[in-house]
Image 1 (cartoon, rainbow, N blue to C red):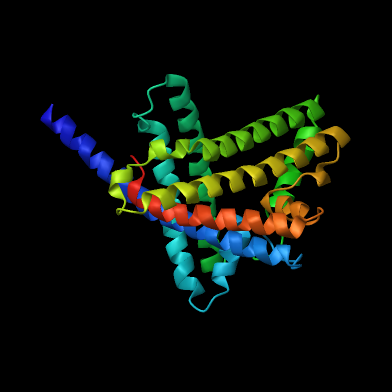
Image 2 (cartoon, rainbow, N blue to C red; image 1 turned 90 degrees about the vertical axis):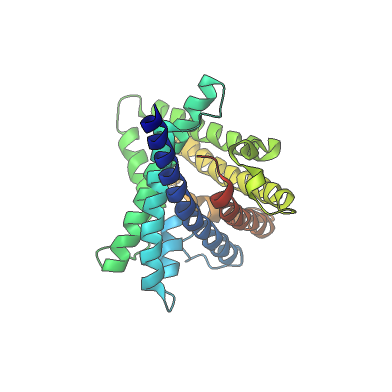
Length: 273
């Protein structure tokens, strides 16, 4: 029994260590995303505004290679942390259905984190491409494959509905401040808790808005049976910029993405494991 408790404590420390390193890097990616979104808002239409574009932006700096190595390790750590959370954590969530949904979400984030980490590793070792193809092209290729299947339009429409549903859930999470339940607020310095809540609210709402646009683009692709109408984060932000008052809206979303980045720094210290 004592040995089992010691093993659980060891696992908890491992998960916590991976989480702290990973959340810092995940936060950095969102800060850079916010910066890239602002550039798009003010007319830099050639800027690639997605996670891969953010990693490329880091690589272009003076100490880019060093930072890319840090990002490689940190993002892989983030992915492993999320996969471990999916496997053994969220024990503080009492409702079984909600716990399952959180674990599924963690598994999805784990795959994304590891993929981004490997992409950063390929860039720093010279094995990756720094071209402009990214989330948009991948999304369109994936959508085209689905549309080619029997009942392909229906399948893409279902995926679009799921993405929009996740987007709404992110917005609700921000509005209701339910993300606070995953944090040990007492671990944060006195006087910072309210700011962490505000940053989380802004961040989750901004992420939900962008994800919602991705879902709507998928819906258009399904309705018109045109995969080129689909797109990832980059296409979503540029679609928002093209709307009336798009510059103002995109700047607000950019600030929200940056706010989520800062929130991640706090969550690195206070997230439950």
